[in-house]
Length: 247
Image 1 (cartoon, rainbow, N blue to C red):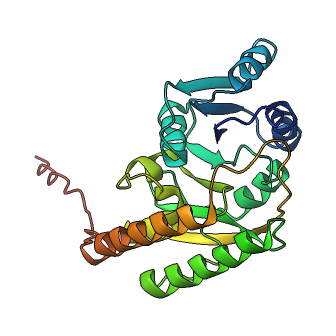
Image 2: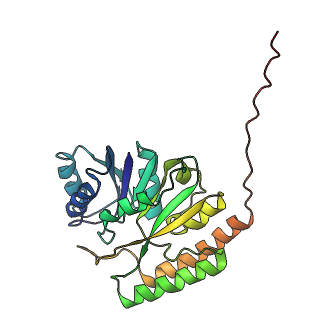
């Protein structure tokens, strides 16, 4: 059982094609699943498209923010409303391929339970972005790796798999979705990178500017480094009462 969380902002034209692909990727592989779209205050026709689709798609659920709060807020809202223990996330622009969700699921070790901090994150091996975005992404990933001692090659990839408990146990802040590998490690867990496909955006335009993202990223990086330096993961053992002596 799995919940697929898709945060969106003004993704008219990308909604139905992506939902079709999610169904194609999960049917026959997961006995039960749900698709949760979190509309982060869209001002285009996205709400109408979601309402029309929901009327004919019983596996689709829609949660709406009254105003835009950011992608991390959208992911958090979706995770909090999810009915199942395991969560997969996708960007709503169609650049992530839902057909890669089973590959992330296959990377999950058999002994991993929802209570254990663990993450699978996509690694976009062939980026379909502009040269400026590819350069900015490479720079950001190298900087994060150096500052946080994080060997994840593509922390900005939107396709991820983790447990609901893992996510909700993490410290939350806006833009945290870009630092999940480091935050999972901070919690005493592990992450694995899985090669995935990457595509050009379907309809619409990107919501991020290269320089805006770089400035915010520098501030966030300092904050995450602060969190990592002040971490303590206790080794927990529940003490059972001693057995009563038999008479």
